Image 1 (cartoon, rainbow, N blue to C red):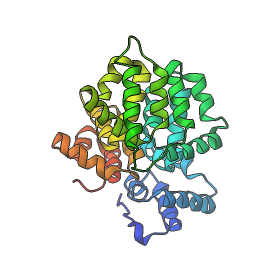
Image 2: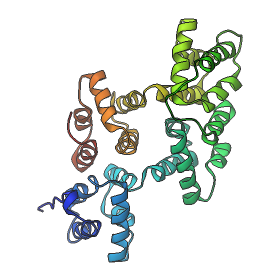
Image 3: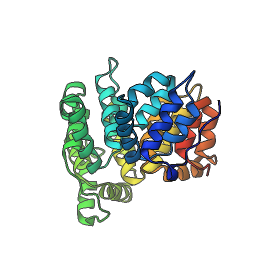
Image 4: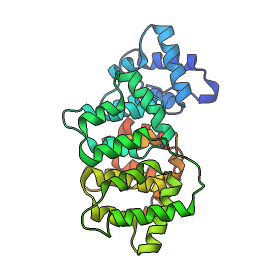
Length: 316
């Protein structure tokens, strides 16, 4: 079957909808055509394509994609079809209501997002599922982990780069007193600082903590906390300093060892493509002396591989 390659600049959403319909028709799907269209359209274009497809064929494009695609490719494409906040809402909801609760994924997504991203995805969460995100966290998480997540999703945080040095020092001292200096841990202080402070402020606190006490805040967290609570604190801290570095670790973990964690691989690539993928790729190359594209190429195959590589863009 010859594949139709449709360059984004020459194609309107209506054209794209018609090309997709043609790709679905006949015996077997022209999967390469589906990939060549959808992987090269941004969120606004993808929404318009869905709108045009419904207008032209009185059919939901997502439902059609579900019946035409299978396996990992289907999972990746369907997730890609949503916009950023809608996607986060779906991932977190699935993680929280699954029979086997997946607090690790819910924590990863919530704690790696900025305050404004969280506010928008909370609105999408309620619009899609008819319940507030806080309600599901309350129901499914527990202990200090639950307290931190609830505080983190409900507290607006400053997103600029300016920091108040006095406040930074004060927080570093408070965290030291709450953790390493005492017997037991005062979790309330950790929750307050990590849920209320900006990313730039937390990164400065980490640096001040190291200068004042000769130990990194990450090590203190590891020593003083455990489980999902530790994971949430570490995620917030790592993303305050360098989100790209954090996602590189997740990608490496997904592809390391025997077998690939495709769910994690899809989640990170699909959710970061329209945010900071160029930084993630640069960070991956710097850390592992191998391009992310080459790593993904060696861990995947077929149309699934083609789709992920199309999202990643040039191999550099």
